[in-house]
Image (cartoon, rainbow, N blue to C red; front, side, top):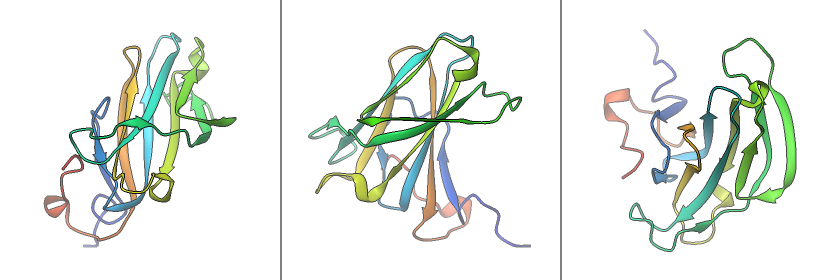
Length: 145
């Protein structure tokens, strides 16, 4: 049986709201954000030198993100903005879910960790993509270490 996606293509932290994620094991990271009920939310991207948040600062690199209802009933809508450290979803059901990516090369020199924090009660999931080293799921490193 071939190796499945977890460990070959991706690693995941399902409860990543406000959690420092190490970028060393992947080319990039995809953040999935969700707040139901058409309430809208603001998600802020930061970078730091270590898992303790040393030197934390906003990372203003988000120029594109996608939104939809989050339940699979509609296609993604591409949205663009001037480079920013935030994604703001409107109080509309069609913007319950937001997805954006951060490339490892976007981090400032000496910075290896990123986190996204919801200012409301939205959830955030972090997905490492394009893993540098493929492993079985049990041998994947902790993403926050």
